View (cartoon, rainbow, N blue to C red):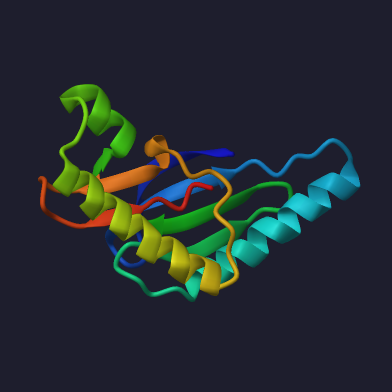
Length: 138
Protein backbone atom coordinates (compact mmCIF):
# COMPACT_ATOMS: atom_id res chain seq x y z
CA UNK A 1 0.00 0.00 0.00
CA UNK A 2 2.96 2.34 -0.06
CA UNK A 3 6.69 2.82 0.15
CA UNK A 4 8.62 3.49 3.36
CA UNK A 5 11.73 5.63 3.69
CA UNK A 6 14.17 6.35 6.49
CA UNK A 7 14.12 10.09 7.14
CA UNK A 8 15.23 12.71 9.63
CA UNK A 9 12.70 14.70 11.62
CA UNK A 10 14.56 18.00 11.43
CA UNK A 11 12.45 19.69 14.11
CA UNK A 12 13.02 16.98 16.75
CA UNK A 13 16.40 15.81 15.38
CA UNK A 14 15.60 12.10 15.24
CA UNK A 15 15.44 9.33 12.68
CA UNK A 16 11.94 8.27 11.62
CA UNK A 17 10.24 6.09 9.02
CA UNK A 18 7.98 7.87 6.54
CA UNK A 19 5.39 5.88 4.64
CA UNK A 20 3.81 7.25 1.48
CA UNK A 21 0.23 6.00 1.45
CA UNK A 22 -1.41 4.98 -1.82
CA UNK A 23 -4.94 6.30 -1.57
CA UNK A 24 -5.77 6.66 -5.25
CA UNK A 25 -8.94 4.71 -5.94
CA UNK A 26 -10.93 3.61 -8.93
CA UNK A 27 -13.07 6.74 -8.74
CA UNK A 28 -13.32 9.88 -6.55
CA UNK A 29 -15.62 8.15 -4.04
CA UNK A 30 -13.22 5.22 -3.66
CA UNK A 31 -10.30 7.62 -3.19
CA UNK A 32 -12.24 9.57 -0.55
CA UNK A 33 -13.09 6.31 1.28
CA UNK A 34 -9.45 5.16 1.25
CA UNK A 35 -8.28 8.56 2.48
CA UNK A 36 -10.77 8.64 5.36
CA UNK A 37 -9.90 5.07 6.35
CA UNK A 38 -6.16 5.82 6.25
CA UNK A 39 -6.55 8.92 8.43
CA UNK A 40 -8.91 7.14 10.86
CA UNK A 41 -6.50 4.21 11.26
CA UNK A 42 -3.47 6.50 11.63
CA UNK A 43 -5.24 8.44 14.40
CA UNK A 44 -6.26 5.24 16.17
CA UNK A 45 -2.76 3.76 15.84
CA UNK A 46 -1.20 6.97 17.20
CA UNK A 47 -3.14 6.41 20.45
CA UNK A 48 -1.68 2.91 20.94
CA UNK A 49 1.22 2.64 23.35
CA UNK A 50 2.51 -0.91 23.23
CA UNK A 51 6.12 -2.17 23.04
CA UNK A 52 5.31 -4.36 20.00
CA UNK A 53 3.48 -1.71 17.97
CA UNK A 54 5.28 0.89 15.87
CA UNK A 55 4.43 4.37 17.13
CA UNK A 56 2.80 6.86 14.76
CA UNK A 57 4.11 10.39 15.27
CA UNK A 58 2.39 12.44 12.58
CA UNK A 59 0.52 12.47 9.27
CA UNK A 60 1.53 14.85 6.52
CA UNK A 61 -1.53 15.67 4.44
CA UNK A 62 -0.89 17.13 1.00
CA UNK A 63 -4.38 16.72 -0.43
CA UNK A 64 -3.95 13.84 -2.86
CA UNK A 65 -0.99 12.40 -0.96
CA UNK A 66 -0.61 11.25 2.64
CA UNK A 67 2.58 10.37 4.47
CA UNK A 68 2.60 8.69 7.86
CA UNK A 69 5.58 9.56 10.06
CA UNK A 70 6.43 6.64 12.35
CA UNK A 71 8.97 5.36 14.78
CA UNK A 72 12.00 3.94 12.98
CA UNK A 73 12.52 0.30 13.93
CA UNK A 74 16.06 -0.88 13.31
CA UNK A 75 15.91 -4.54 12.56
CA UNK A 76 15.05 -7.08 9.91
CA UNK A 77 11.77 -8.32 8.58
CA UNK A 78 10.75 -11.81 9.57
CA UNK A 79 10.75 -12.63 5.85
CA UNK A 80 14.40 -11.59 5.55
CA UNK A 81 15.36 -13.50 8.70
CA UNK A 82 13.80 -16.67 7.29
CA UNK A 83 15.50 -16.20 3.92
CA UNK A 84 18.92 -15.61 5.51
CA UNK A 85 18.79 -18.09 8.39
CA UNK A 86 16.16 -20.66 7.44
CA UNK A 87 13.40 -21.87 9.75
CA UNK A 88 13.37 -20.54 13.30
CA UNK A 89 13.51 -22.81 16.31
CA UNK A 90 10.40 -23.45 18.41
CA UNK A 91 11.39 -20.99 21.16
CA UNK A 92 12.06 -18.09 18.77
CA UNK A 93 8.91 -18.89 16.77
CA UNK A 94 6.83 -18.86 19.95
CA UNK A 95 8.44 -15.61 21.16
CA UNK A 96 7.73 -13.81 17.90
CA UNK A 97 4.24 -15.30 17.66
CA UNK A 98 3.33 -14.23 21.20
CA UNK A 99 4.62 -10.72 20.49
CA UNK A 100 2.42 -10.54 17.41
CA UNK A 101 -0.64 -11.80 19.30
CA UNK A 102 -0.25 -9.21 22.05
CA UNK A 103 0.35 -6.45 19.50
CA UNK A 104 -2.67 -7.41 17.40
CA UNK A 105 -4.90 -7.59 20.47
CA UNK A 106 -3.88 -4.06 21.40
CA UNK A 107 -4.28 -2.80 17.84
CA UNK A 108 -7.71 -4.39 17.43
CA UNK A 109 -8.82 -3.06 20.81
CA UNK A 110 -7.84 0.39 19.53
CA UNK A 111 -10.12 0.01 16.53
CA UNK A 112 -7.45 -0.67 13.92
CA UNK A 113 -7.57 -3.59 11.52
CA UNK A 114 -4.13 -4.43 10.15
CA UNK A 115 -4.84 -5.42 6.57
CA UNK A 116 -1.49 -6.90 5.60
CA UNK A 117 -0.04 -9.31 8.16
CA UNK A 118 2.80 -11.21 6.52
CA UNK A 119 6.47 -11.99 7.32
CA UNK A 120 7.65 -9.01 5.26
CA UNK A 121 5.68 -6.66 7.53
CA UNK A 122 6.90 -8.07 10.85
CA UNK A 123 10.06 -6.35 12.07
CA UNK A 124 12.35 -8.03 14.56
CA UNK A 125 14.69 -5.71 16.43
CA UNK A 126 18.25 -6.55 17.31
CA UNK A 127 19.78 -9.97 17.86
CA UNK A 128 17.73 -13.10 18.70
CA UNK A 129 16.14 -12.91 22.12
CA UNK A 130 15.22 -9.23 21.87
CA UNK A 131 11.88 -7.54 21.20
CA UNK A 132 9.59 -7.88 18.22
CA UNK A 133 7.91 -4.86 16.67
CA UNK A 134 5.02 -5.14 14.26
CA UNK A 135 5.37 -2.79 11.36
CA UNK A 136 2.64 -0.27 10.66
CA UNK A 137 2.60 -1.04 7.00
CA UNK A 138 -0.87 -2.37 6.55
